Image (cartoon, rainbow, N blue to C red; front, side):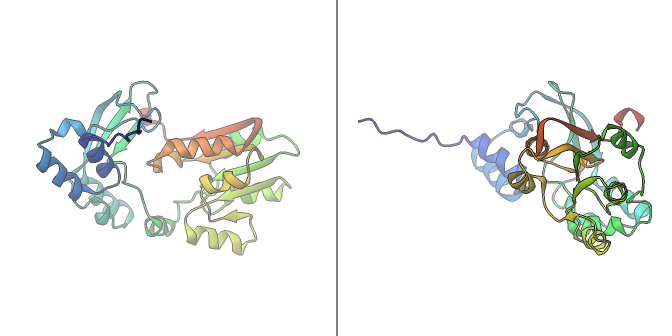
Length: 240
């Protein structure tokens, strides 16, 4: 009987994984030991998993740090240790634009800092009105990344069954003090216990904050009933 041999990952795959996880020290060691050229670190599309991507821009890390400090009074230096810039790539198959390295994402403290800004969690957005017009009587609605729960609160007042998910613990606490049905849980975990449960899953200005967007979207779809609606709102790149 022939023994099956598990194929070891190539050195390029190991380096790509280190970069994706933010382990730049190990990636540098592997680069030095194996004389791997930097182009091997080209990212793959978060949506397709292929390297059919093109670099469309670069943002100096120092600029981002200064803008957050001067415009919002928020300190973000800790996210940019070890590199000088953020790369912007575009997926050639989907048109999806994303930042690289992938591990750049705000932590709970970051969003708590933003929460202290009066206008950050807007009470009402035009997207909320669009969503309201799509809701039918008797439907059950899920909002992912619901912030302080203003949309969920408006639905509750009109007797619409709804649930909100939010990872900012401070925002969840304030929402729960108002007895709103908002939980500190990821959509990936929530969809496991609420498979094909909702008539609509909505998420407003959230996807652009998520580095690993495909599992997020897949879980959102899994939480939908057959024929349900997934409503996603993101910033308009052309307006910037």
